[in-house]
Image (cartoon, rainbow, N blue to C red; front, top):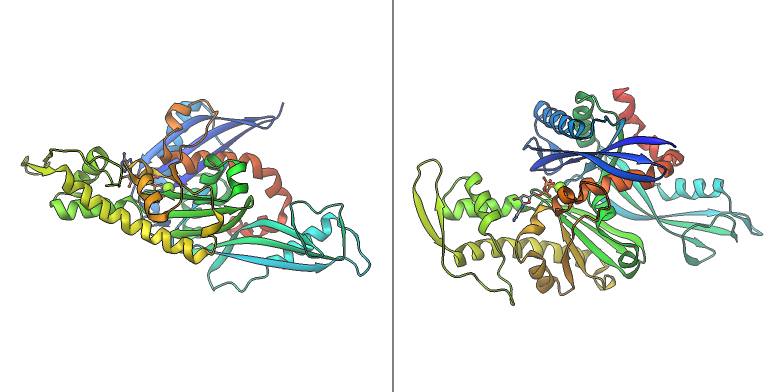
Length: 402
Ligand SMILES: Nc1ncnc2c1ncn2[C@@H]1O[C@H](COP(=O)(O)OP(=O)(O)OP(=O)(O)O)[C@@H](O)[C@H]1O
Ligand SMILES: [Mg+2]
């Protein structure tokens, strides 16, 4: 029986989450969880190397103490405005008379599909296959063994700032961990949230945390669009603090305890909320409606940003299954309902699907990306090892730390 210990590290703007999973014969079980509040990463960028690596070490220690195991390799989320994505296509000739397509042809077409004029300082982190096309016939998932003259591959390419990756890599190496792979946050979350049927039908997933809103669209079972918007729960907290003249810590508590989004069908709680300023012990009352109005105006702005992004993507009419909202912000009462009203598509909150032990702890939307990382690692590890091109694309970073 082959056994492997893997870890998922989700570097969020509000906290660092580290999960340890034990994999045996293709089944993984999450056995350790560490979560450390930290502001050392902001919207996908490391803002304090020492504090970030300290937070990683602490989260790792918590998870190791819970599981009694140490992971050999860590999969890490990436997010932020430095991420760019594009759909690209590669074309190769198999033979002028047609012959069976082999593994070498797949390699060749992948090479061709990843030819892209990259901005300086951008590195490819994902080359995600969308479909193969043989002599104009599309929708093919695995062309090996089929016959054809011309082979095309459509891929979704995700690139990231190499500086941002370098700094994350440095924190990981300072925490004495070995980097497995970088994984786009929304892609990781999709592994714990979305099912194959909804991906086939066409669906969007929004992971909205403290600092970023990470959007991924699946159409016909394939990734059609990804983007990262620099908007999240912090934005709502800041506005509550400003409007009520309280500290950010107090505003965060008010948001979590009393915050809600005004929706067409939802009831507005009557009465007032009593808020105590910790610094002065001064107490004052605020009507529920006022809190609802502050929160709703910010949420509407966030959702307006998502609406524009869906329009820009060109796939808005191709997601009949609607949008799933996950990440900590999805816990805000009424957020998903409001999303449905503004985006005019079905909407629900996404809780990480977990048949793992510890699912009681991990069932919050805040854990979608970290639970998804473990699933991603399980499903892609073998593929990644085989896909030497992708591995090579990250080797520049691995070389630095080895
Ligand atoms: N019950 C709640 N109501 C409203 N907001 C909540 C609630 N619980 C958590 N949040 C918000 O969720 C956010 C944290 O979510 P999450 O852990 O997904 O973010 P993150 O991964 O650290 O950040 P990011 O991925 O955006 O960089 C915070 O802004 C927090 O205020
Ligand atoms: Mg997050």
